[in-house]
Length: 174
Image (cartoon, rainbow, N blue to C red):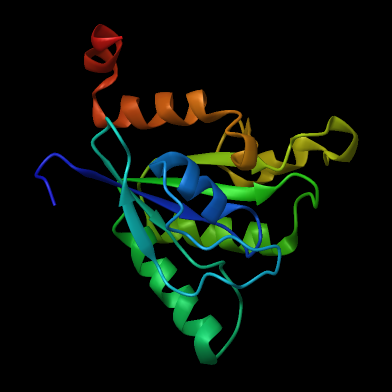
């Protein structure tokens, strides 16, 4: 890993689109994407093209006491603890869930890294939940994205570049 490489961790409940987001940010198909929740059971990493970021796709955070889901959640928590930045992904179609609140509290407790709240699956405003509810998570203003269609990625890039201190450098190369 390069000395100046920063670690960004994608976290959230199962089936919020974390793996689709990972594939979009890394321009890869390394993360398994499926409509069935719980397909991702480990943490994988990939580098973002043209940026000093290593992106980590984690399993969905689940509240279980044992088994593979517990092990997967433990791996995700370790990734949160070692993150330079966090992308907290929620499902805009489902709306705010009690589990989103629980996991947001854990992120605040386990990490001092800056976090960006991403409301995914916002392709249709007809099916979009009340976005104001998501302010309760304590991450500030949410960003509406569609990981599947790479919509809202500019805001993600701006967030990451600002943290990495590369904003000016990247703007000069455009």
